[in-house]
Image 1 (cartoon, rainbow, N blue to C red):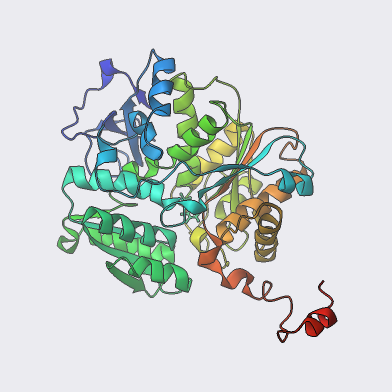
Image 2 (image 1 turned 90 degrees about the vertical axis):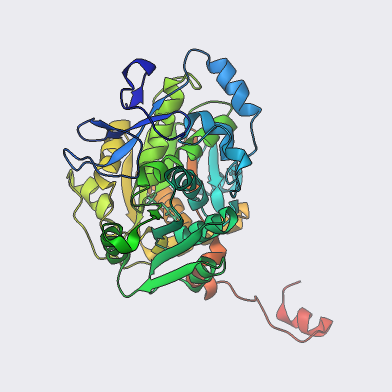
Amino acid sequence: MSVLTAADSSPTASVDLGPAAALSCRECGERFPLSPIFACASCFGPLEIAYDLPSGDPEGLRRRIEAGPKSIWRYAPLLPVPADVATKPNLNPGLTPLVKADRLAAELGVTGPLYVKDDSGNPTHSFKDRVVAQALEAARAFGFTTLSCSSTGNLAGAVGAAAARAGLRSCVFIPHDLEQAKVVMAAVYGGQVVAIDGSYDDVNRFCSELIGDPLGEGWGFVNVNLRPYYAEGSKTLAFEICEQLGWRLPDQLVIPIASGSQLTKIDKGLKELIATGLVEDRPYRIFGAQAEGCSPVSRAFRDGHDVVRPVKPNTIAKSLAIGNPADGPYVLDIARRTGGAVADVTDAQVVDAIGLLARTEGIFTETAGGVTLGVTRKLIEEGALDPSLTTVVINSGDGLKTLDAVASAAGPTATIPPSLDAFRQAGLA
Ligand SMILES: *Cc1c(COP(=O)(O)O)cnc(C)c1O
């Protein structure tokens, strides 16, 4: 794992991003100074952050975290951010509820503890506020004046809101066919929103070209040239889950896959908790969830392939509709190495799962959460998930953003005149 010790942190950081020591290539391990780059100059592999992680006093670190802000910033000693990050204008996301889902467990035939990590309550109602908060600090450190992204929906709103709070300009790029709520949330914070006539993968390719052009000078694309920093935000899901379990690793996690960044960085976060001694080292299994209409990683897993063949997405789970997921091969590796799996469900199963979570736990999730819970149910039925162990299911977004998915199935039970007679006749009492 890419933990730098003080002795070998040769590239010196010219910017203050806390414990972040360097960028490190995930393929060849070459290190580069902290800067807004995302691909290795030698082998073109993706870069990630290597740290001088605190070591030697896990008890002290735990106390420091527990006394910290009630947001992701309590974990600042493990993130690429300056120590005074909480004092800067930002959305302070995180520390969302880990809901013990007993009624859901009963319905699924789960006997061990089942939890939903409910990230729908973040400031812009998805897990994306976690990753954008890291990218914002990198954008500040590198002097970018415009915050940007290619988005499947939730990221655009998270970038718009974070830029508004920080007083930066924003300009975000989305596919033209997103849900109305996500377009409105992208635009309402006052930044520019550009809809591209194409798929998310087209939008992403467009943004890569823009970065290489003088037009994109001074622009920090949170998930492109700031991607190594952005990605670290997903570790906070791992940190919170373990802290909320009493500084213990869960046995099994079920995680949605769009680009695969969240899943790979939750794994990185768990490994860092072990490396710093904050949790005891024991096995955990990671499961990935996709929609059948965009399931390139699930297919590769099923077929035993190491490479992920791109697909053209066609699913109601638009926030997960990435046909060519950048972290796909790493997801496969993690699922196989930890004894997990990657699976997919149909759109009908997604809608069913949204209803199931709402009716059993009072949590209204978006289609991505329907994918994750639907896959959880399928993996339990297939015997891949052990129903007697501690399981955490990620809910990464809010159902109010994907109303169309359930609108036809969730209307008034009856429409009646305002009279007791009518109510009696409707047979609902
Ligand atoms: C972006 C997103 C994800 C995961 O995205 P990755 O690219 O895999 O990190 C999951 N759920 C929702 C709701 C999202 O918006």
